[in-house]
Image (cartoon, rainbow, N blue to C red; front, side, top):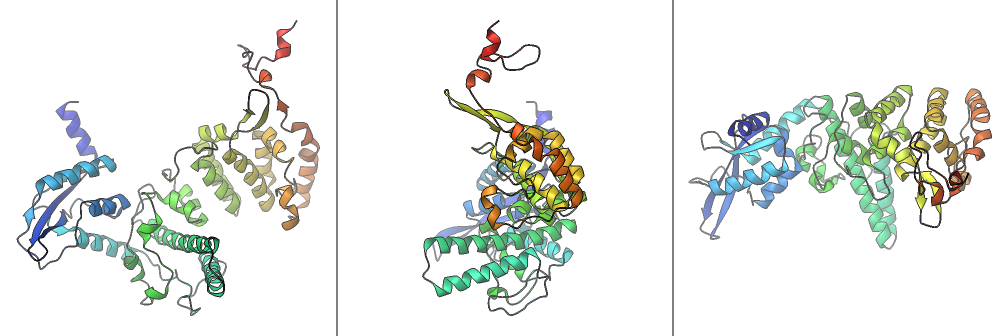
Amino acid sequence: MTEATTKYQNIEKKQIKVLIKSIYNPYENEYSYYLFLSPTNVGNEILHLFFKKLCMQFHISVWNNYLSNCQEELELTSAFCIYANRKMDKHHFIIGNKDQCVIDYSSLKRQIVSKMNSAGNFSMLFVTDESGKGLFYSYEDSTEYKLLQELKDCVAQKDNATIDRSMQWNFEQRYKFLNLHRYSLVIENMIKENTIDIDEFIPILDKHDIIDYYTAQKNNLYWAEPQSLFEEDIYPLDLAYMARNHELMFYLIKMKASKFSKGRGVRMDGASMQSDFITFMFENAKDVSELALIMKFMSNHSEQIEKETEIVAKGNTYSSRQCINSFGGENIIRTWYKCTLRLQNIEYLELLLKKYKKQLLGLLNTINPYTGNWLSMEKDLSVIDMDLEINKYIKKNIVPFIKSHEFQHTSYKDCGIWGFDARTGRPIRESDLYV
């Protein structure tokens, strides 16, 4: 690689100048280290989870303005830059000097957070504290309100019974979920105020940076330290799904957000994050415009979706069965169908039948065609009140053909063991070998 090429790549990346300084503490006989940055070239990157963990790894201390006689640690700064550059691809950390790096990490972080808070209005986030006292007005049909009520009910059970492991796990999951959802509301406001980008990692704000902005009763609210909620840096799309914030999810898709990281790899069952997103959106779509957004997302990820929804033969040497390739693909078909029934939309039902006819009709052997519910769960779930037209469509175009499209159990000798037809690509069956 030439020197010119290297220089060009560095210019393409955002340069961030850093400098670590140290001071000797004679009372404890050890050195303390402080990170300084140039405020002219630093953005929200220092609020990423990785940057916070990196500072902890290098034992970066909170700056004290009363300290003086700091020693520049160029070797330590060089190591910091090397490690940061390996982890943050779009940025280029370089060693700055004392004239450039004039503001400490903690102060600069507070400045960035204060600008973010001033751009957003978050005063409607909180509903009640654990005693039931109202703090702010909130709609009772909001997801946050329901999550808080569920957590309070869980706390009541916890107080009135012997705590077993399952109850403790249930409490911890509800607690985390409520905090995830509240954090997503903060990020949603920031995105709409253009203080963070839809395709950049979300900032990790300290709990007090957020709560101090809303209420003095922060100690009475269910709030965890935000950095404890995430294991890695994630994008807004990841957060919208993790927090079950479907309003944020549809807004991001509408604004053409495309990046996500959480669970990016395909799982053991063949499902992917794309199928999780699609299933989540079908479960929460409220009108045709949001259905159109789902179709747009599916189109942008068509290669992965087609792979998950294709019909394949699975089994062993002695027997096999035809089925949808992954559990994620199966969920796409099922939730798409249920969504069209819920919204009473024949147009998208027709599109589903046209695109995935065999997959749908095969699934409907175990699902009620008039509700989309699993037959085993039908007694526990209410039947959907069908519109007359869509009822007629199901009776005419779906119900008569379900059994004829049931997935067939077959043998591997009928699935390509004898080769494939060179012209059509069709598997050569054993019967084709005989004249």
